[in-house]
Amino acid sequence: MLDVVLTIINVILAVVSAFGAWNSIKYFRKSKNLTIFAQTNKALVEVQKMLIKLPEALSASNSSRRGKKGLSLHNTLCDIGKELNANLTEINSNIPTEYSDAIRQLQNKDGFIMKTYPINIAGLHRELPICPVTDSLSIGAFVIFGDPELTTAAAKALLDLAPEYDYIITGEAKGIPLAHEMARLAGNQKYFVVRKKAKAYMTGVFEVKLHSITTQGEQSLFLDKAEADLIKGSRILIVDDVISTGESLRAVEELVNAAGGIIVGKLAVLAEGDAQTRTDIKYLEKLPVFHPDGTVIEGSIH
Image (cartoon, rainbow, N blue to C red; front, side, top):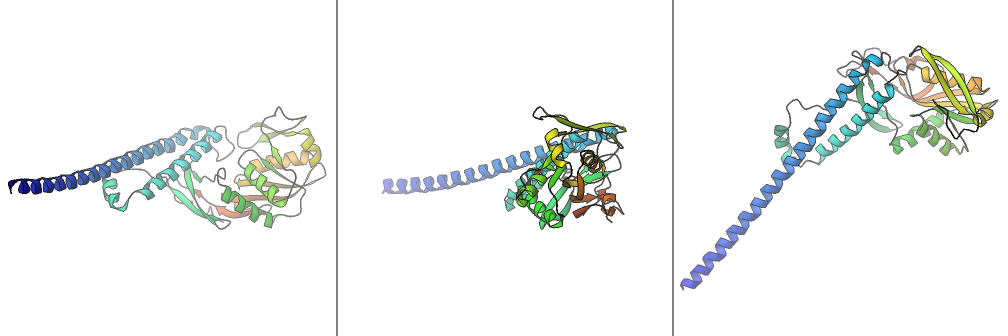
């Protein structure tokens, strides 16, 4: 009889121990996952803070919104910030609901989330990171690189606005995927990219020297001589991702004119700020400019 009682007690203890162990593992996993979520999130937040502060240090060499020396680095920082913000959003969306309150308690109270500007382009919704350019001005960073869905949709929409043309041309670098997709969809055999430096592959160099308004210096643009020969007498369609001050567009125009091309149209995905009032361009959507706090500057949407 005693053996039976001891056996029953042992079974009960085994069940209780197993239940306790299961609970311990469950809470351990919860604690472990919670810590990982919190630490990853906090790390991304801190990196974002750093990246947002870095462009401010570039403002001295960025007295104009575009075209300044150092802007490529600024755009790179904004692009990285966009990727980090996307990662942070994805992590937050994957946090189990029951962990949300605890996550907020573990996060730094002044955790930073990059401000964004919501916009619909060719039927697609996107959130553009708002990046500071100077102490008093921020812009919405439109990055078409790595977004094939938007590239294709925007290319189709711009082709609907395009006049008859022979060749598409764009300046490097952000307009390249757009020009490529437009040419592909239209069945064009070739399109041109204006280069900022002569390339080794060029069979001959067609160079145009321009005076830059924003940098107050001389700028050189290059094409392969064989491409310049094709442009001569041809109907040329200029495309770009964003038209803002218009200097990049003007530079491409001058090169096409120097090569003897006939400009039949100028298209962009977005017109930023005062570019919206131009009558010589067509675009899909308007993009305002922003105060440092991320609010839209009054009058920057026309």
